[in-house]
Length: 377
Image (cartoon, rainbow, N blue to C red; front, side, top):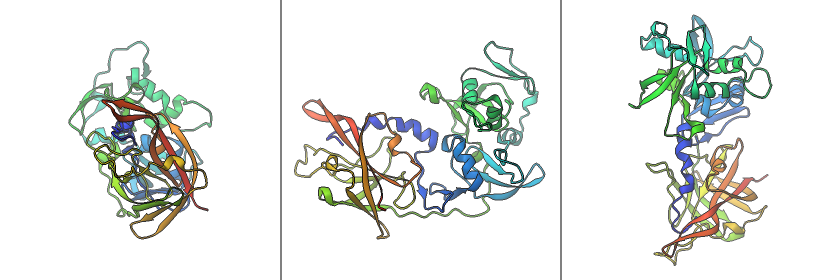
């Protein structure tokens, strides 16, 4: 990166941290299975298919249990708990009704002793959607959020009301201020299957988040988590005469990436090699003025061409070989390159473009150079 890089371009990660718990590390998995080192549990089969097709992490969150048998409304059902939902497997049903969502909103209200039916309805308002089944209204940003998301049922573009109801259920309360588990007061509205929360500090398109009802209900896992990963410790790129150790780094208190001055960093919230997901590395491209004799670790990354080979060594001593696919210039606000990609990929993040100079020093560069490499063979 730049000599005095502030990494302001990663500011959107503050939002991403709230939405997806900061790029969960995906651990080694069998075909049709996706495992997360953040919790140690895997998602597979029809549950994985449903999870992927209907929103993934932002909608359901991470798995908190394996697929396990539980009694739900008097019947034994195969269920898997996630941070925001409980997915129930009904194998006798045809797709897309084979996987259904638990009524966690109703369960959470009942556990707290709250009877939403006893609460007075709000006066009718224009531009709201009324639900006579519960006597509640859906308005404003909650209405827009409800209409924007749902469970895919008909294979058509867009979200029908039936698909929205399949994800959220009927509204059980009016939108009203409530103190949540973090001690802060938010405008929230409860539904049969979810709780919508308005977070005014976030950008307008992401202000409505789903509550972590699955985590709050504290499900009991039938099996302990399994965590398997091999953190990368060294990188070698013969084409640019690089052979350096890797330093694990994460985010600071403001959710801004920590970039070591003279080393290549492995982003420890990304995957590790061999896990079938995105392994993210970053480093500076310019020397620091106080240490001009120390070369910048990624100074020559821009010289890489498709076909160049990269070897990563893991803590176990195993080696993982990748072949450069491409390099692209990204704007500072384009952070999708460091998120899960649904496949094994090595991503190198560095800086390129015009230099931003303040007080005679380079403090930033206009673009990010994103180098991606796929596993060899």
